[in-house]
Length: 605
Image (tube, helix red, strand yellow):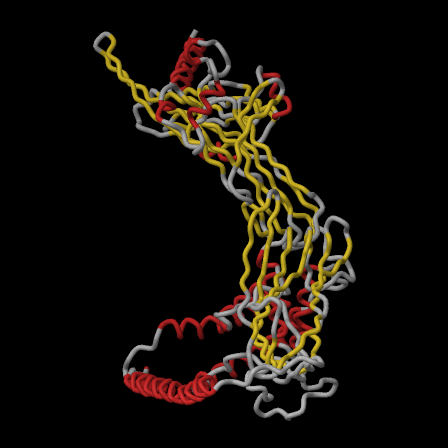
């Protein structure tokens, strides 16, 4: 008898402990992307709070709320507390909601089944919200443009919708214009579609994973308004229009009714990025199309000795970003000087692609009269549609240089033009044609007055320039120097300190055999050194460093974008680069210390 009483007492105590903490799910079977509510109740007066850390293994905790209830029965008061946690499953399949400890009590484990999206029809009507992602092509070349499209499909009004950006490592991502909205039919249901497109440029070959964006929103609860349907809707499509409209933001009318948070992630996409083909042109330009054009400041161009004329060369590429376009160089024959100006780049969206354009301007100053030939300009590129190397070119051009305005050759040159050219003679007068009239005395007097006027103008301009120079020298002497106790300008300190920091990063990347980090550090060093015109590609940096560092940089570029036959030797590369980069920094420091100024224009050939 005592044994039975002991067993009953133990069961009663266990029942009390169990009753002190209870847990249940509002649903035990949901579709992928949906959320479930975990409801906890506790009658323990110890003031404990639920320990929900065990949920992190299989669930995301999206939101939580707490409530408290007190009652008085037969003069005895009692209280209970409740919690609601909105959970987003991290995977499909059969999941276990672990036991949750609340103070001195523990709940029982619960079971939840999460069906994949393909099997969601087993739960009833088609899901109210879908989030899709797709890529094209799936086997691009390195640095080739990939079209990444994200679509949000909804047939119910959503509150507070937010879509994150796609997460892609080792790639450059650029949005392609604004999002678009349209209607679509899926499985007999009408959806409103919001579509976003991105241009993705992979920066390395091999397998590249694109983690899909995540949608978070508030979804109307099922069976609202007593409709008995899974989702509300006299006219769900009209509700969506009213909530989103053209702006994509919900209106105040969405504030009524209960909602449930949802969290959807688009499927992960994987790219098989191909390396740069062997024997392909360098710099590597995988484009859909590429053209070259030019324009002159005078059309048709008229070249005259000593007078500058501007030639603009335009490279236009479809399927490339502006940063991928190479620097253009203009070769000139003997007898003409070339002064390049800073190139300007821009990109625009054209349908499903980017159109990048770079404009390079060159000032040409002829030194001798006669005929000369401007060499052709070529840019090699890779046609991603036809899978072959192609070349855009501007053909060579024959131009005639006229003598100077005074009819005499430029100073410092021989009076006779160079071989193969003859001084231009006046056109012969046809027989029987009278010669032109002699200039009148008045016209000759006007010419004389004009010629006597110009020396005075030149003298006045020279005096003005001299006065400006004197004032500038006085103001420069009046400025305090850092040695006089005045603080040095922070801009100069920052500009000279950055290259040293970048050198350390270059050394670390080389010694760690990390070619991608070495490339980035080299471009950061170059940006700190050439602040006005920083190179954005290694092939643009090579001619600025030159010497023994050129083949090392070429090898680094090939290791990043081409199929390398052997691993990149960063330690050997650093031995060459360290000497070249340090020498350039010392040269710049010496010029700054001596006050020497770089030439206004680089010398052309």
